[in-house]
Amino acid sequence: MTRASSRRPGPPTRTERGIPEATVARLPVYLRALTALSDSGIATASSEDLATAAGVNSAKLRKDLSYLGSYGTRGVGYDVEYLRYQIAREIGVTQDWAVVIVGIGNLGHALANYSGFGTRGFRIVALLDADPNLIGERVGDMEVRDFAQIEDIVKADRVSIGVITTPAGPAQEVCDRLVAAGVTSILNFAPVVLSVPDGVDIRKVDLSIELQILAYHEQRKSGEAALPEVPELPAMNGLTDLPSVGGGVGA
Amino acid sequence: MTRASSRRPGPPTRTERGIPEATVARLPVYLRALTALSDSGIATASSEDLATAAGVNSAKLRKDLSYLGSYGTRGVGYDVEYLRYQIAREIGVTQDWAVVIVGIGNLGHALANYSGFGTRGFRIVALLDADPNLIGERVGDMEVRDFAQIEDIVKADRVSIGVITTPAGPAQEVCDRLVAAGVTSILNFAPVVLSVPDGVDIRKVDLSIELQILAYHEQRKSGEAALPEVPELPAMNGLTDLPSVGGGVGA
DNA sequence: CCGATTTTGTTCTCACGTTCACAAGCTCCT
DNA sequence: AGGAGCTTGTGAACGTGAGAACAAAATCGG
Image (cartoon, rainbow over all chains, first blue to last red; front, side, top):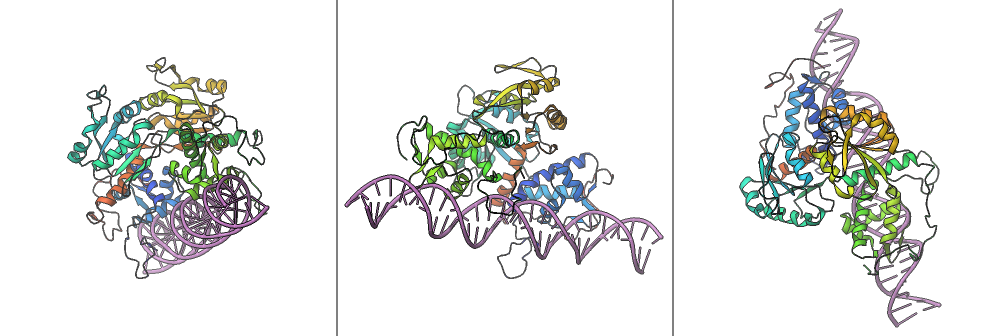
């Protein structure tokens, strides 16, 4: 079963272009590992080597790579440069993607100054904010511009990716306006659930959620048997006598 | 994966303290949605309401909540305050967790100033860096201290969570020293795969990986039929004649 | 007090993702 | 040339997660 999802009863249909989402999320990790190996002068690496560098197990790595094609050589391994190029191409970072950052607070500043913007493949074309006090300020080698210009900027630079680093409040409106302007991928750092129309991809980076997940596991470690187990209110049917339920507005 | 796995072949065994990881990752989202509803004066909400606010479907939400216990009322819904407390307790944010931030560059600054530190439940007890030029600098209402003091700080404040915002280079060493000092949960912003011993949890936040995932989908949207499909090198067995393979050191 | 209505909690099924295990294929040594 | 030794690519088993669907419980109106 090469790629080519099942569905069709006929022949395997070559590369029916269907890479599992879980695999897509790991490809950038492999890409980074390959770049590191390349920088160390390593020309060839086995799936075991690569897996170690990427922090996964080798079976998973091999299966992931098999969705892209047969780029390895049995008995030998993978050519680092060649595989690196193939993954970069598959991800789409052999071309440059124009990015705008909206919300130039602490985090926006930090991202704007993030040299190299992680890996190559992305180009920040504008820093935007709605605060008149910020507009015109220089950040790195760019100047903060008025978010009101978003339409023009997106069209002029063919921007497809928007990064939202505003507070939670304005995030949905910023998102709506980005989408209206033509942005079709959004990376959201604001602590809210954004809703977008079909066809627009959205990903979320959320510090406090990550911390809470860690806290959950941490509690298990220390607590385990020492947990208070708290009231728990064995039956608790009536939903009555709660400590401090606010107003009485029903849903 | 966490402790307390199933193992036992017997009956369903009540609430054997095993909440699926996927559910754990969503609980903070529900908690935030409940807080928002609570702030709006809503006292009761159905699974449908909650699901909408959290951006998931109601069946999934109900199943997730069912792992915690039966905290709803059939025909009515969930009491917002009560459920909020139960989830907060399950996650472990009814107590305060001491956190250190290591690496006070742009991102470290941004996180240090992140008011409220997302949601309550976390307390930054120290900002650390190894750069003598930074040590002593004031950031918000705290002062940057020497990373060399990590052992003392972890012990004095019972720090269990460390946030790494250093560049990739020193990240693994910082991680090792955090672990050696007694930190058992790590949130890593550095673009490297960190390895930690068993018993230590680690989570990763990685801007460039998120962007690359977006780029992949973006490429599919615009390209689809316009993709170059590139060389692809039909057979390519010998791994020979590659454009620019670096040194010749084998693995 | 009873039936209609609402909404939860749970069961069942299907899809997705991970891991194992091994045949296929390549290189190298004799 | 032939066999030994590696390493990939993949088929199959297994485990986890998502979604549909429904029975069980609670409220409310008559």
